[in-house]
Image (tube, rainbow, N blue to C red; front, side, top):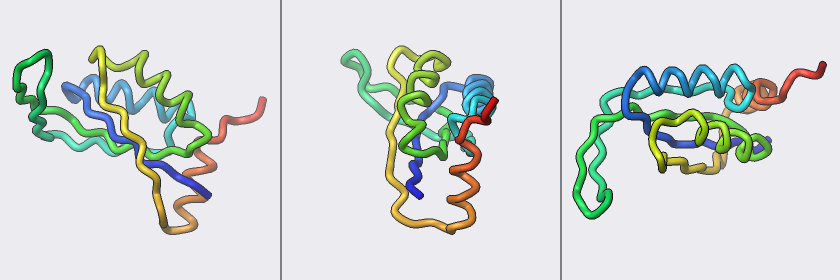
Length: 108
């Protein structure tokens, strides 16, 4: 079973919680870990910016990535959010099976 770890930062805990709840409820992510207090330094529109953000660690599958990305873009308050998908090269087989089951939409 293939899995992905998607990284995304949110500007605050409220937006992070909203994004996480929606993605899990819609079977786009199996689990999302919210890590508050992430400090980012980046260039934006020619200036160096410093932000305190909430890092989201989103667990999903390649089959759900396109839908997850589209929904994340619709939910996210930034005009250009960070969305980076990293392949999971190994993992605990029962967890990976659970992850796959969680992102499989229920049949009507």
